Image (cartoon, rainbow, N blue to C red; front, side, top):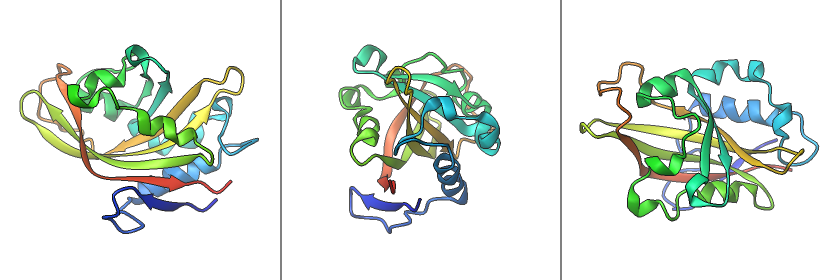
Length: 185
C-alpha cells in the first residue's frame, strides 16, 4: 500500500515533515493481515509493533461525549510524559473546553469510504506552563466480532525528561499541520 497525503489546510508539502518513525509505523499498520481495507483488531500483534510500544496508544471510539475516545492502551513514554496512566480515561477530558464538542470528529472520519490515516501536530501543555510540540500518527482498526471502532497511533516528541509535576494537569492544544493519509485499498 502506498499512501499519499491530503492536506486539509493546503499549507504543507506532501510529506509534511513526517518522521521515519511515522512512516515505519504506517508500514507496520499496513502489514496487519486484513480481509478488507481496515484491519481487524484481533489481528493486532504487539510483537510486530515492538519498536513503537513506548509511544503507542489505542483509542476506543464511541458516539457519546462522556465516553467518546477511551484510552485502551498507552505506552510507557506516553504515560511518563503525561505524568499519569490515561488508560480507561476519556481523551476528551484532556482537550480545551472550547474544542471538546468537536474533538474526535476527525478520528471518526478515518473510517470513511475510503478509510484513511491521519498525521497531526499538537502541543502538550501542563498547568505549570510547560509546553511541548508532539505529533500523532493514527490509523483505524475495527473489531470484526462486534463492530467496535479503534484508532491505533503513536505520539512522537514526548520527552523522557519532562520537567513538570507528575500530577496529570495537562491538556492538548491543536498545533499546526493536520493531514489525512489516503490508504490504498
